[in-house]
Amino acid sequence: MAREDRNVIGFTVALISEFASHFGIHPRQAYAYLKRYGGMDHLHSHYAVLHTQSFPDTVEALAQVCINNGGALT
Image (cartoon, rainbow, N blue to C red; front, side, top):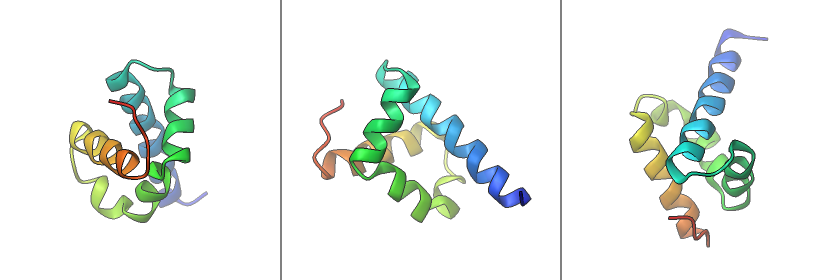
């Protein structure tokens, strides 16, 4: 596995954990929510920018993407 792929996977796992912690849910629930409401697609499409921001800013950005796509987690 390439180093860049490992970095993307590590960032994604850490971000899902932060998202779950922020909203007080299990990481598995956080992943399902992000997947259902477009957060994971946004993360993968914009990884180059998102990984340079703080985790709180990235969590808020993903939460807003999900809200815009019908999610209701606040």
